[in-house]
Image (cartoon, rainbow, N blue to C red; front, side, top):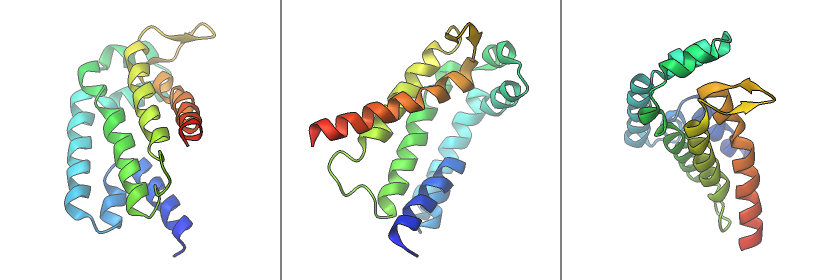
Amino acid sequence: MEKKDKIIESILWSIALPGFSQILNGRLIKGFLFIGMEFVINVMANFNEIIRMSFIGDIEGAVSQTDYQWLMFYPCLYFFAMWDAFKDAGGGKNPYSYLPFFCSAFLVTVGIMYSAQAKVFGILLGSVWFPMLCVMPGLILGFFLKRVLK
């Protein structure tokens, strides 16, 4: 398998579920630890129900079901697992390669904090859609900082 293909495969499996990529790369203990942490945070934050309600358009219901104290842990775990998968697959060799992952984790966490009130064009997006929108500014900021610091 080509290095670039392995990197893309690793990131995609990590997006599917933190820990899958680590298992794929033979890092079993780390992989099961990530899956375990993801499961605990997911259950304690009521994340699956929040996602379900958001997909069917019940944003107010999703916001009311959210345990923000737990959900705020999710972005850091999620993006760190992706970063780790990226590195294990052979990426991350350039200086500051971690910045897009870090900045995304940070801005998504901030997005969670504001998600119960933040509206885009007058529409409440809630605890799933608004933080997801925060990924793009996180990536842009991360790649910008990476370029400036190089």
